[in-house]
Length: 482
Ligand code: BG6
Image (cartoon, rainbow, N blue to C red; front, side, top):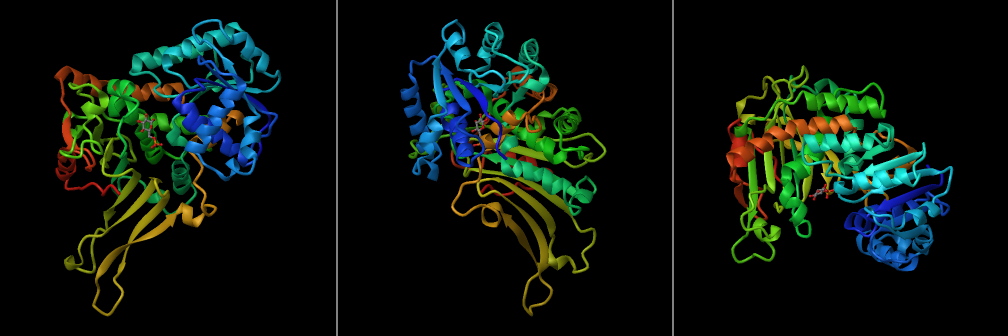
């Protein structure tokens, strides 16, 4: 559904996120006909550019990061016509008057803060001082939203002094992923799963976000953050919430966010022996392909974790007694993000012990190869007696639904258009972010106090051996990363 013409200002318009994600996402939405040439996208940054050099920069970023048939059929040139550029100082007065001249009164106006959180306050203040905000103004802020509860509270308070909560769009791009949204549809639009979605029938749930890439190019940020702040506090927490929450009464922003918040507030503190921190090590002789974390980070004494596995409990009626195992890491054996709901065994096997143990597993694959698989037990075909095997009922979205040869839409495409439409459902509310930090802060404080050193794991492996032990102690095992 096309959106009305809008003005979108991207602060940090020459930065990595804008070039790799935001502008390519906008281009793909433009190709899909979702917005027209009357809309304006205004890049703003400190770097010296004029409109033409900026457009050339964006064109080459799009060709590199999001090649699309629109690059060849003239659509790219039409998209570039919607772009302007303003050289602007976030911490000074340069460029703000010029920016004001680019904005059209009466339109939806969105400001995308694609900059470090240290600049949020300056930007918000100047938007206010130069009278650039209207009732229709929205601001989009990226993670990291603070680095602990205190800094997140400060950021929320500062934003609240300039904008209403309904104007603030805190992005967690995992919420824009197609399969993450599908998780809610699978849960709440089918009768099949929801009656079984509780501790009576679910043995445990695994949430894995494995990455094969390292931290190259982002060492300065990552070495201060680590996997807990970079991935668990936000992306894995969101996945956990959507998997565990109660059905909201309606698919509406506050109804959904209230339910997510209840999950976070019901999380037990994590016991130290339910956490494994890891840091990747080089593989001897293959340092180029498999470097060590400390080399990548340029910090020979770093004790930052590039991997974390946790056993998490949600103390509420639905989930008491069903653990959630979360893990995420860099330079693992493959890039693979999966939620696996592991159902309990049937209470009694009428086929006898020799048929082995079989349990249903619902696997929601976020990436790559997005889709949902339900593992069921059937009789092995043939006359050889009653042998049971597990087979997947497979729904790979690309095969089942996607137009041939086309990549699934990127999370940012959906999220940016939601900003323009004024739909906050897939964005985090301030109290949610704070509750997530309130849960992570004591875990991090405990490591710092004990001077915890992460366990080594080989770059390109499934992670530290201790993570296997975490499961083994509970007579469970991780699903393979593939
Ligand atoms: C970002 C993290 O938010 O998400 C990165 O800062 C991580 O460290 C990235 O690599 C993962 O996103 P995706 O969409 O590639 O799974």
